Length: 195
Length: 438
Image 1: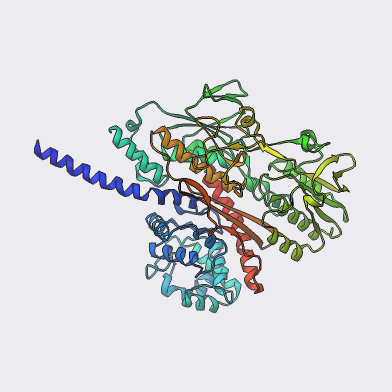
Image 2: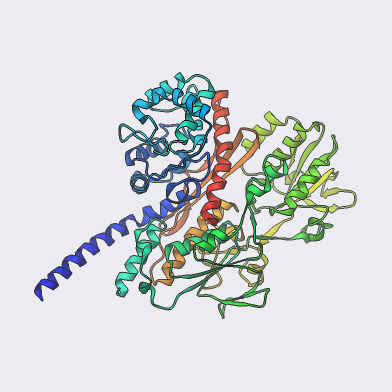
């Protein structure tokens, strides 16, 4: 009998801890719900210019949101949002979305564009992996099955002179890409990769 | 599962929906009588509320009543009039919500009884509810403009301030304009649906005229108000893209249209009499008639609500969301009547309703809004609003939000900013529509 009581005590304690953790997360979950409006349910976007964010790494998400909030990274819209959140909330949101699975939205493109894209992404490989799905560190985002339109727009930011994009290497490499056609092909190449 | 467990689980679900692992609760957990929620109105507000209530507590019986089988989004409908979008891209049905276990009833809710907690439908049916979500949108006060009527709106003089057949009717009228004729837009007194909408419409109309050999034509905005949303951004865009084509007449300069003559296509204000090629009068509006008839609206015609939960200030167990409400950090920072505001209000109401039906306190809400406007190809901008609870009160966060930067000295950087937001607008619409209807 004593043993059962003890066991029940352990179970209750464990459940209690789980509930407490959820209570602490309640606010973050409510905040995360509002992200769905633009980034899709579970962070899987269905709009071509809006990135999927579910399953991106915690540190990438956190850093980008912090940089936007503090005006250290250019954004057209997001900076104005994140000035309304505490750093702790941004950390919570990064944790929330990084815990979701990365769901590539595989977009088709014709073989010529893909071949062009493969070539145009040669210097991206070192950090993002051959298909964009094997980033070499936790600060590098997944690109496979990301929306092509979004990737193209991000590359435009890196390629426009004087725009605050703090990642020097990324800026250098994006500017080294030749024509705008290279940019579109590179974006379509990653968008077409399932893994 | 005992009562404590169930409460804890629902609490987690309210917090964690829709990703929560707790959502797969065995049905025995909800053995108690099923709570019934009726949602009236299947626009952004109503559809989002129905979906999130079901996501947060699948045991709740949710019924959505909507009179049209197909919804047409108002956002991006100005672009349909100017020929840059197709109305089909703005349309969605209710199958997605049906698949989520929501009872979708295509019928018209004609009246409600707050004391008996019932909603009457045109078909003669009566629905009982434990909680009612009203998202009735707006209805128009045609009598405010002498000479205008609903019959004219549906035939020769569409306002197109609800997207659908009138959007296409106005498109036809624009296309039939002769070079040199004037397109007049009459803007009603605030508050009205989509605060930047009339000014975006002006740009889109000018866009069509400019690109179809009708550069001698003008767009004149006769405004009952003395200022407008994103004014600096619009004026910058108008000047760059449509120089000399768009004229804005403020209320103080006699912009308020009080009368129109449909036969001669003339608008009358206190100071002016203006003949139009196309006369587009947007009549003043108020909360949807069902809410007004039930006594839920104030003297100005809008529904007052608890700012944190969206529950009606005058009737228990009725939550009002969307354009019908007056919401925000009043009196200065009222929330715009926008799709995004309706969606965020619906999520707050859903959280409050699910909590209440489960005997729990309402979770802390969070309200956000983004409104994009597009004036030309690759030229868009936005306004962001964030409202948070501080000291038990809903507060507009001044440090955040606001409009896109107006002056960016470097031309390529300015063009980048405007292009990004022009591209974000359709991406936003796809996602927020899926968030409500899929």
